[in-house]
Image 1 (cartoon, rainbow, N blue to C red):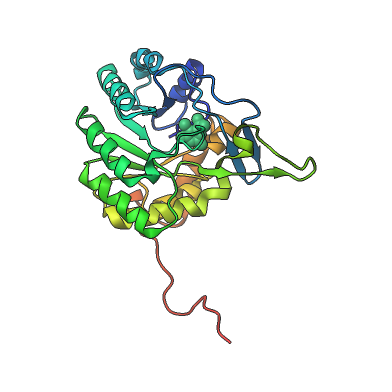
Image 2 (tube, helix red, strand yellow):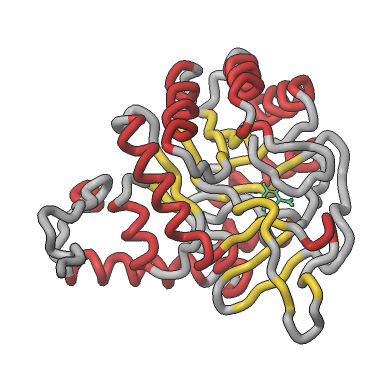
Length: 301
Ligand code: RRO
């Protein structure tokens, strides 16, 4: 499926996703009011990936609630993504999307691009408060969109919170926040907002995403499915996420680059790779990453 972010803000983009082979329609993260987002240039892409400081450009949650019945005609899960500026905003939007017929609601606790608003998911006390309160306002499946964590203890602690608060999915990872890409010719950052700082995606972040997926998989022990994201451009990339424990993948940077045809290409590539490697089912892949034994790759004198 697509990742919440690129090409899922406007009605025509959501319809294209409906017509594509994306397994679901994931909506751009919503706020209470419509937003035009941050100043341009706020997106840049090269062969290694992307950086964005979109700034939550979206039509406001009420518009997406109205669109849900229309989007249902495509016969696939509709997954709004919610990004409030306070707990009560999260609660209001989650309740509204529940009523409007969302199939799953993704709670975005990891937007890196709002000036003066640190990512909730890096504050474990606040995250616990948000997750338990949001859990109590809906019975719909709740997925939590998380940022990359770089310490194992942080991954372990967040995994515990997801289990304790009965979350139904963990989307790993959002972009790597507060990064910079420099244009050396101009001696200038490639995007404008936040002094050039933005969220990194694409090939740049795949190993970070895989590391997060693998640790969360081992902590969650199959009790909560993982939706992998961060650098999926090909069927083999998707395969790597499945090996590390993801059950689904989302595609952001590569979808923006290639458009909605990417979903059928990646499915075909994945099927071909699974046949080549003689896997009869994706269930034989999920979480089956082998770790190196002995000294095969060790440095010896
Ligand atoms: O809109 C954005 O700037 C944005 C969001 Br909400 C997010 O979750 N992740 C990202 O890279 N950009």
